[in-house]
Image: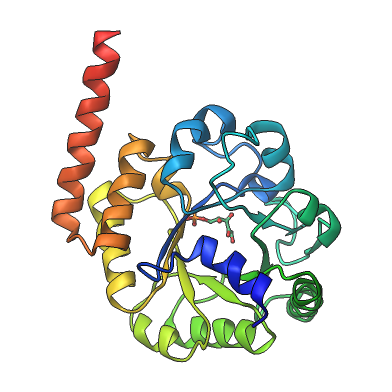
Length: 270
Ligand code: 5RP
């Protein structure tokens, strides 16, 4: 891997722990104003310092994130899209040129692939082209294994999708947790980060994080389980404790509760 590409990837996957806590806020590209993301600017301002990387769309990055405030937060920019929950989700193309991604000073670009879905071929070719561009300019590519509504999120399917992404040149892969997750990690030759998926009660989301990390994930790229938590600020810190310090879920939940109650006290004093 070339120097620039490795350097950018090291901004995201921290060399001291080999892990990362990425904050995904790209949902609006097909879901519109997702719960918790109605006002991305207000949400993100206090969270940025706790994210090893932020995964937004171009529009949210430009309109809602202060470039100075985000100076220390690497950006993994969502560059695929073109559909919505009202259409065929797999019908995606590239939505941002590499030139604009570079202008936005990104540390990586992210694209979804839809293995087994209607537009499998197109999304895999999109990934391959994006990897060519990424290699040309030293920008790592994160492949997101999107799963169609009628597909099983099991180790058989997810290891197929992750391995294809890696074979086509993705520098890291985002996928869902499943039973026998070790198999997905073992058969994927590049770092794998776990997507959080639908909102769970906080103790369960911390358990999920712990399970993914202890089974070999290089971290998380988590959205709803952070920004839809009762306290997103407490949740991202609790997730960090699991990912970077190996904290057990019970302890991490205690940390969540204590940060949340500290916040409530601060608000009460105002
Ligand atoms: C869909 C995506 C997202 O929009 C998002 O990043 C998912 O994050 P989470 O499941 O943790 O809310 O990648 O394929």
